[in-house]
Length: 208
Length: 317
Image (cartoon, rainbow over all chains, first blue to last red; front, side, top):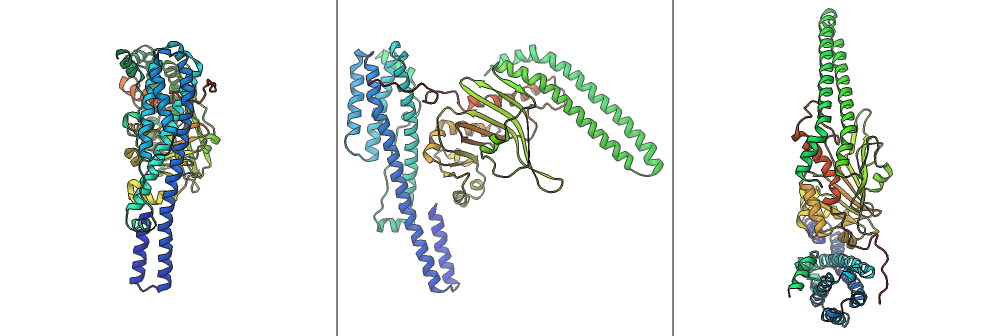
């Protein structure tokens, strides 16, 4: 949105020059415009950083919930160790090391799938389903998933804004000069954004 | 929500006898007013106007007729509301209560920050309150006006005001307002909206293109705005807008959803000049009630899969 004001400002300076406005005024206006353009890039980059750290906080919350969920489930799901092990292994992979947003998103998608499989499998264990701790953990997980989706959407919007700023004229010239680049989006597959169809997954597990 | 056949059966069994009685009273009352008005207007216009050459008695007679007609209409509408709204509500959901003279408090309307203009007259009626599924809600008809000049009044809001518990916990404030500037002025309108702030909330751009075409969103926390306005809720709000709620405003504040839906007519009012015994006419009337009561389901406020209101998380590891 700043680009619109910056272009309007450039046109204003050009019009001032054509109308014979004195040079010091034109220079002052040009400096102000430069500051506006530069600050808009810095602000967009800061917003993207802040938004990405919020995604990180929500991911951390989800990672913290997984051991509790697995602990609650394994008391009843003795014969489903492969499902639980997969969740634990993916979680261990996710909390180790730093990754780019797209790599992190890919790994988180796998965790989402594994958690859905865990919840769908739990449908076959009435005692587990009735367990209050497990129910509370499922609610907490739903909460975190919603918060995570909101943080991800905020980050993607901030990244889109930064990418627009660093690619559009005239801010792209400043961005290139001062080393500001584009950001990757934190993409989630369409299926992952929808509420899980637990019944369908349960039927699939029963069949297979 | 009740099915079409249930609604038809309810209309035939419960409402029709009541409506027949109402229809008799309606015809009688209108005929009485009409006969008296005709007689008085005729007498005053013939005897006085021609005799004394002054139209004042005729003007006074017409004014009296309008006054009486309005009185009869108001009384009929009042009776109808008292009798029918409670019945229809009970049919829909026995947990709902109708308070004809009740309304949602002015403080709550003000706290929603949906309308920034000042007002000096706040009137409300037709309060419906109760619980649908797991959600407590209330709605009423409001007419909020400000005095503009000596005798004229400007309308701040006139229509349905709805308040419900929201199913997720939140701390900040998020506002969904009709987007007029962007629809009219495009990018420039959007740029100008960015300079504006609503009760300390800043403009937030959401990714649903259709939603963005109809609405502008201001929030104190952009992440929280997206937490509240999920893709599914945005689609539901767009659907509501397409189904006639064209200028709706929504505020998420104090753990509640506040929705203001401007209406060009009185809530639950049947047209007293038309026959009441018409399934089609009744369906339109019930449709309005259905829209208001159905907001809880339409906005999916009964889904309780999140932590709000749940027992605290037990430690298992």
